[in-house]
Amino acid sequence: MITPASEKTHIQVWDNCLKVIKDNIPTQSFKTWFVPIQPVRLEKNVLTIQVPSPFFYEWLEEHYINLLKKTIKKELGSDGTLEYTIVVDSAYQNNSPYTVKMPASHRNAISNPPVSMPLNIHSEGNSKEIPNPFVIPGLKKIKVNSQLNDRLNFDNFIEGDCNRLARSAGYAIAEKPGLTAFNPFFLYSHVGLGKTHLSQAIGIHIKNNFPDKTVLYLSAEQFQLQFTDSIVNKNQNDFINFYQMMDVLIIDDIHNLAGKQKTQDVFFHIFNHLHQRSKQIIITSDKAPVELNGIEQRLLSRFKWGLAADLQLPDFETRVAILKKKTYNDGIEMPNDVIDYLAFSITSNIRELEGALNSLIAQSVLNKKSINLDLAKKMIDKIVISNTKEISIDYIQKVVCDYFAISVDDMNSKSRKRDIVQARQLAMYFSKEMTKASLTTIGLQCGNKDHATVLHACRTVTNLLETDRIFKTYHDELVRKIKL
Image (cartoon, rainbow, N blue to C red; front, side):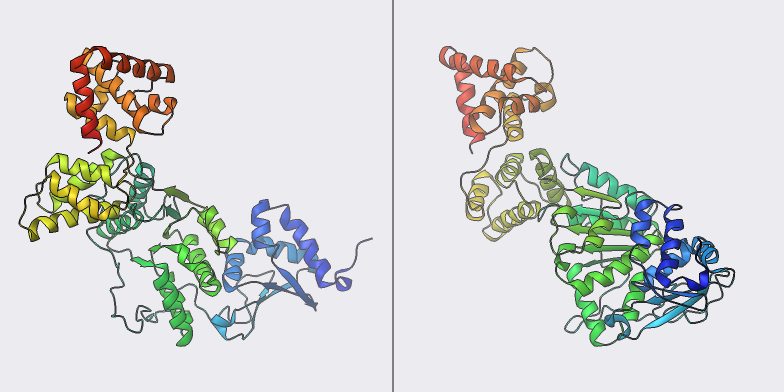
């Protein structure tokens, strides 16, 4: 027996609506946008439902209005009306509730004003100039149009195996901001590996090629301070509207929002607003999304919508390229053996690597000494905590190849020339003796050879050291160079 509409409760009516809605949209969309809704009351064919936020209301209006109209009409008849009760956090509206009514038969017939927080900030009639929130006590007013450091561009960003994916994706974003699948673009790595540089390089490229777009870079800490200031000054709406106007929003060190629930909440709404309108969002962090603690799950899920790319430790060749690029830009000539020594000595942090280079230059200028290997060694001993430096396979290959005047590619090729074979065998031998790498790993990095080839090379070197005086000289000189 079918229950007449007049005898149904608000819960029954909404449950019946949900059954229809669930069959017409994807499961994840249903869970995201309809499960959180609560039926409130049913009076005279007016069903009132409670939605969690103004953004939630706006999303339903723009994406599911036709479906809602059909289900309400089916349950309550042609006169059925849907009324929203929107939960507004006290940080936005001083806890004053409001209601939005919508007849199910006509979208535009809305009885009450939608929300006091302007959402369509570019719509006609809303030409109010939004105040600049970048006025923080104790700080100067900063430029709103970018906050980008022009030196942190793509030309100065050295590409290597450690960052090729992130750099390629970043350049694609810079060419078509908001129009790629990489939105949001989530960059993560340990400190000093280039997250800030790459994120700013994207912003600079966009600003130069799309001058009509509004690009903004800032730290998560700045964002949090501004939000706190907007609460004190009771202008949260202006704060939100300012960020909703961005075409490209770059937030650095998002992990600093951990545990700051109110700030995360406002960022959640800004994120959704920008993403919905295909505005580019770039986020950096010292950890991958799955490893972030203190960040709300709904934010973490959105961080995974686009591309999460990590920046890994730079290999020896990349570190050398970074140093050469910096000395070239600064107009400084530096011996290759000094650059190699710096790249060998500092392996874990690009920032420290560049700092060591600056210190070496300063030592040379202040003491009126030429830059050489001896000066570099004295300086490195002061700034590197441990004198026992970790030797890597790529560094060993570089030293061996320089010694025999061949390229790393030649050494790792299938060539059977005597000097190349000897260089290859010595590189394998030193890698086994001086690193913790397995025979398989050594083989892979030395021309994709198997572990048996590496073992054979080590035995050959051992035998030659006992029988060939010239070969032993090669060995001894290389040991000194590698352990410099």
